[in-house]
Length: 148
Image (tube, rainbow, N blue to C red; front, side):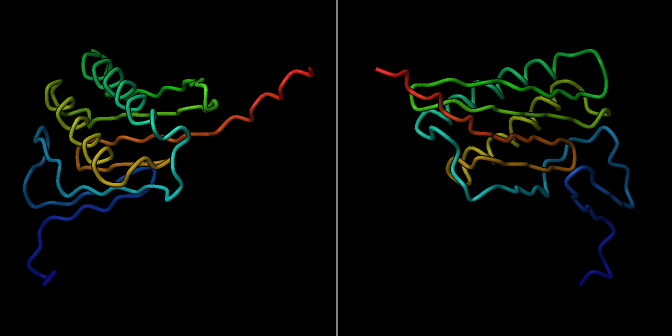
């Protein structure tokens, strides 16, 4: 029955809208959360999860130790492996009212959602009321073999 609800959150790709009859400023909230992901598998999926984990460990450490507010960081990395190359675009963001440990906790929670939900999708985005985590892979064309 929605008539008794006094809290709501709506997630869009680029933003969210929240309403509550109580203050949520500086409060760490990770629920409700939602994950959107591609059904297409990431390239080199055998090694992808470790690459992704390493990347988000770096980003979470960097964004949560930053003195600049808002806590926002984007990254683009070319990953070259024997199986082929791809570009990994990643982004993390916390609500600017969170303290550093709360930002870090929220992003680690979001990454845990991605890493345990759906295999190795080529694209995923996790929304929580206080943070956002996103990544996308783009496969690069393979180089032709040199003539023999």
